[in-house]
Amino acid sequence: MLLRSLLLLYAIIGISSIFMPWLYLPKGNGHVYGYLTDGLITGFLFFIVILFIILTFKKDKLSSLQIALSGIIGLLNVYIAYDKHIGIESDKTNFVSDNYFINLGFAGMNQGIGIYVMGLAGIGVFITALIMFITSNYSKSNSENIQKHRENKALILKALPIILPLLIGIFYFLQFNQPKLSDEEIKVTLKQDLESMGNALVAKDYVKFVDFYPNIMIQSSGGKDKLVELLQSTMNEINAKGTTVKSVAFLDQYDTKTKDKTIQSIITQKVVFKTAQGDKSETQKMLAISDNGGESWDFIATDGKTKEQLNKIYPSLNQNLEF
Picture 1 (tube, rainbow, N blue to C red):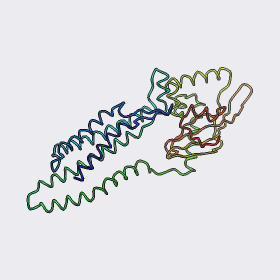
Picture 2 (picture 1 turned 60 degrees about the vertical axis):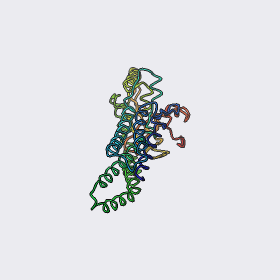
Picture 3 (picture 1 turned 180 degrees about the vertical axis):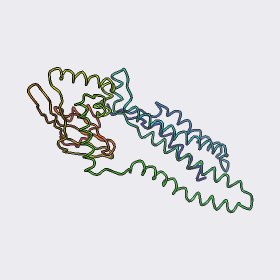
Picture 4 (picture 1 turned 45 degrees about the vertical axis):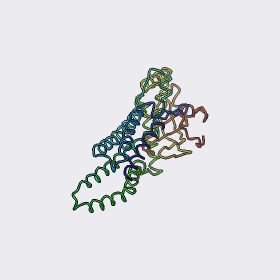
């Protein structure tokens, strides 16, 4: 009875996930809920598990076929959750539409909580069905092993409340508790990425230069190709006037704010321009952004922009940053 109750609980949680956001759109603080995408399919699959339980309510247990199908349904929903997560991760950099407003609306998209809830519910259904299948096979033992079967089943049922949270805990530990970089290591990677971005600009490698833009800015501009085209056109106009970028160097790192794995920092860089009148230098303020704990960085020029203006360009701006 306990296992069927757990199976029912996970299936209900799985169905509830379709009413949660699967996609978060920071522009306009919008959400796309599961039932607007593939959620109706996953919800129906979880409902089949509930149907199995309802149909066998007056019986001692589910049939081996029903248990096996429930396990398969759990795995299938885990796969769908994983596929959705990977798909959105890819679309963060590759999604492009000919419609400017669609690009703007989907800029900076992120996975919603519903995908993770569905995946965890699928894991719960699969593990519970697996244990039910094992205990069901024990029950088919001959009369001499009945007592042993009961002892084994009781042991599994006692261990279940510990095993499931432990597995989920291990999953979250592996997912969110990766080794963190030290403050010095973070500063080194920030400096390296800023100088790599600057070197790309000096070499007129605008494709590589745009790689250091936040995804939301790339998408808002109509995609990487259009942004590269715009940047190249702008730089050609500057070069035609006899001005080129000679060097870019990191100067200093000021206020820094961290939330989970996202680090945002105000920095300055020194840009040296080669002109007909000689070299001229300029100090520029930048917003440095890392979404992976400082392993890699994106940059936004902040000179001449207020915090409100920057927030429109980059809605995920940490409001506690001191400009």
